[in-house]
Structure formats: structure tokens, C-alpha cells
Length: 158
Image 1 (tube, rainbow, N blue to C red):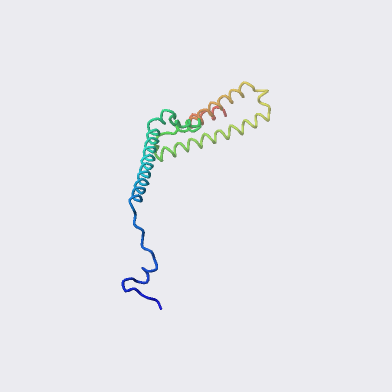
Image 2: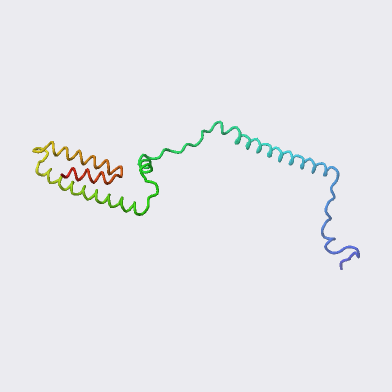
């Protein structure tokens, strides 16, 4: 049978107690902690130097961002857009625009008929004058002056 010591338990008899640290072990632990602290301080200082470089030195070597220019069509649209119009003004503008488009449609129809009949040969001066008036109407239409465009188209029709 096994002998049991009255002051010891079964668990303590099978495992060995934790070794006690000696003076040399304490000195080695302190050196390792000092080395770790030195390494952490070095990393911290390196990070501070990098942040300082990004804040103070890097802006001298990087040019500021310049946004690309707007396309010409967007600039023209932005300058030709009237400031806040009322719904009544919008409706009036749309009505004038429709009138100008109707006059242009009639002009284009007449131009096709005259070109088929050879008007450029037998009535060159009046035909060219009518085309010049139509171009003036186109310019007014592009400038959103629909009343002037309609008038120019109607004069070209006459």
C-alpha cells in the first residue's frame, strides 16, 4: 500500500513547487524590461519624427490640388441659366420656344422645297439673305432669346 504523509496532499506530492527566482534572474528580468522600454521609446520617437515630417516638410514638396476646369458646355449652361424664375415666366419662355421651333420647322420645310426647285441658282441673293436671317435666328435661339429667334425665322420665311 501507499504511504500517505499527513501534511501533504496527493496533488502536492506529484507536482514540483514553482522555482524561486534568484538575484541573477531578477537582474536578467530587469535588463529585458529595460531593453523593451528602450525599444518602445525608440519606436515612439520614430513615429513622432515621421508625423512631424508629414506635417512640416512634406507640404513643401507637394503641390496643392487644382480642380480640373469645367467643360465649355457646362460653363455656357451655367452662364445662360437665368436666376430663379417663377412658373409663369417658365411657361412664357416655353411658349416662346415652341413658337420659335414651329417657325423654324416651317422655314426648314420651305428651304427643302426651294432647294429642290433650284432656288440657289435662279434666286441666289434672296435665298442667301433668307439663310443669313435663319442663322441670326439660330444664334438668338442658342442665347435663349426665343422671341428674337422666332422673329428672325419668320422674317426669313418672308
